[in-house]
Length: 194
Picture 1 (cartoon, helix red, strand yellow):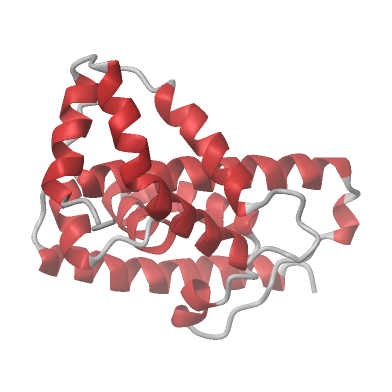
Picture 2 (cartoon, rainbow, N blue to C red):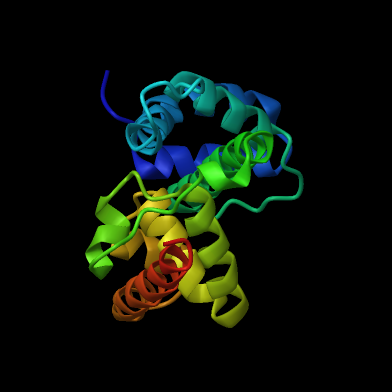
């Protein structure tokens, strides 16, 4: 089966936004593999004994997606950016609940040595990263959204620019600055516990 075109997905998203429920039924088979790939990417960095699996993450994100109201889908990239945000939220909620049930002394953040490590080391504490992203969003919400779409959503520079309605150069600049800022933020947080 050929991959659906971005235009097909966009048309179904817009129809769904306009209240056409059968559009959602047609959309899900077209985007399921990409959602599963996204979930698998998230889960690759989790510990082996993690009780949440990629398929469960996809299904939880799907449940949240169909419950979203008043979303005006722009295009395929926008859909996957929102999906990535939902998956991030699910994993962070899961990690926070797990952390809450454990004693605080048993948790340590992973120290980072360079900015790229923030985005390559999938063992990075997702709760610490989420806290840092929330702080970044308070300072510069666009940079936080760029990180969310690029790191969590796997969107390209061009797709991120389309969703944010800015130039690819702006996204690239925001991406570079946000990585450096997050490295500093996460490194400072890990040093407090040594």
